[in-house]
Length: 173
Image 1: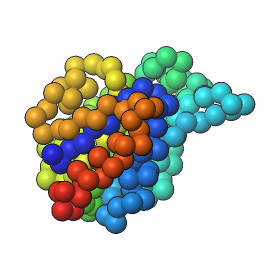
Image 2: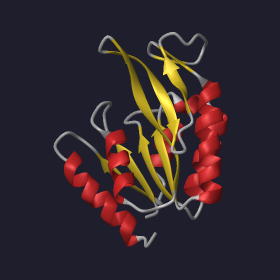
Image 3: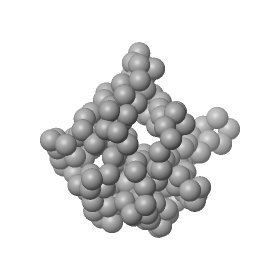
Image 4: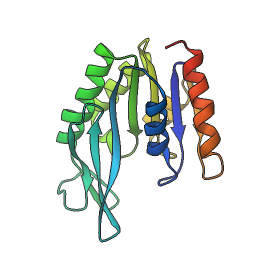
């Protein structure tokens, strides 16, 4: 399967797993990942960072607006101008597309949802993280015939790297 989804609870290490896999592979990769923003050891938001190092704010407690997940306001502008743009470039130029994450915050953007489907439907290899819950869009992605889902937890996170790496290498990228 050319589409691999990593599913697990927040803080289990999904982003760390993706970064470690990227370090081990000698592939041309594009896309984006997210990182927590902390102030005084308290999470206050999330950064969005493209693999070519464009940075923005995906969500923050100080972002105003109607698009909210819990206490976080979602910054659609940075999601589309960094996240969606990086996926477009990866579709055009790269062997491996990284999407971290397909989750409740990201699916506020129709452009994001369309681009994710374009990536999954392409001949490119996709490595993505995906939320545990979610709406019908997230459920439909998980139900696709062309995806392999790995459920991540604290007990299996180390062995998952070997499984995902071998699956990617088996595809002869």
